[in-house]
Amino acid sequence: MKLKKRNKRSRARGNRTLGWAMKKHKGSGNRGGKGMAGTGKRADQRKSWVIKNQFPYFGKQGMTSKSTKRRINKVINLWQIAEKYKAGELKLLDCTILGDGEISGKYIITAKGVSKAAREKIEKAGGKVFVVGEKEEKTETTGEKKEKKSEKANDSKVKSPKG
Image 1 (cartoon, rainbow, N blue to C red):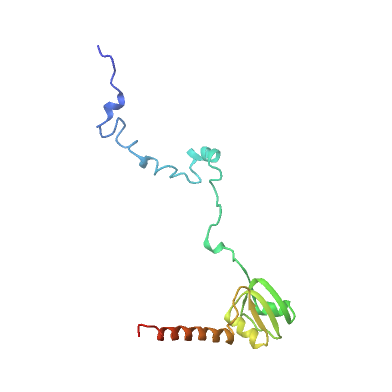
Image 2: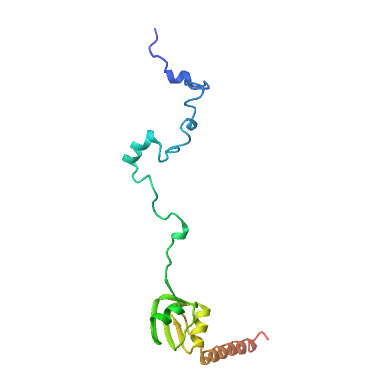
């Protein structure tokens, strides 16, 4: 008399279909893929489970394309400056100035950024542009100091005992 009956599953091992029919239960192909594959908007057999457990699953979330990126800083053109503001001192600290349009009058503008064309047009009209965080051009005195340091370095090289 047998004390332990052999497991039904162990008999299926080594068999090509593992105890199932030839087509079904071979793998993910019957479902259409792995995991949630095939569960689109109209996958009715999974819809109630998806709505209950994976909300929000349907519809678009977040950024849907690269074109929806916001600009980091505001942009203003010269023609807009000429329309909105009178000539004088302006502080546009969160704006970048672009060179579209013409400007007349002396504007002294402090801005976050300036394009080359805008800078040329403002300076041509007699104004000035200052960019926040931009270093001013080096004066002649600092240039002279640098030259003196380099001459001293050359002198020390000449006077070295290796000669």
